[in-house]
Length: 78
Image 1 (cartoon, one colour):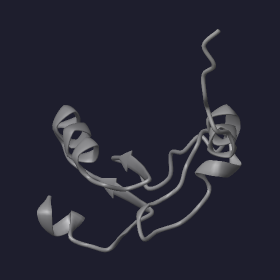
Image 2: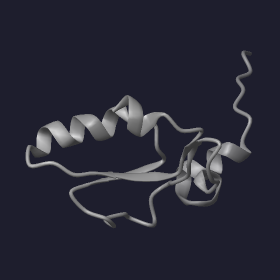
Image 3: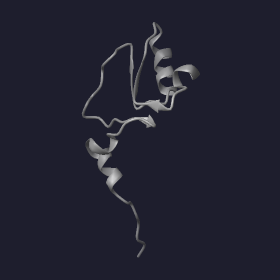
């Protein structure tokens, strides 16, 4: 897992394994914007996406979560 994650980039990746729960655990550990398990492409393109580290953009472009990158939350007590 360290070798797979030893990169300045992290746009997408895939984990393959016969033990699916173990493959899911590996996918959770990796720092990548989009990951699949036992598949090359299995993304919901309506969901937020984007890269980690020095990779990609896109999280700010999709869905309700993307809108949050354009907000500055604050509170006012009265």
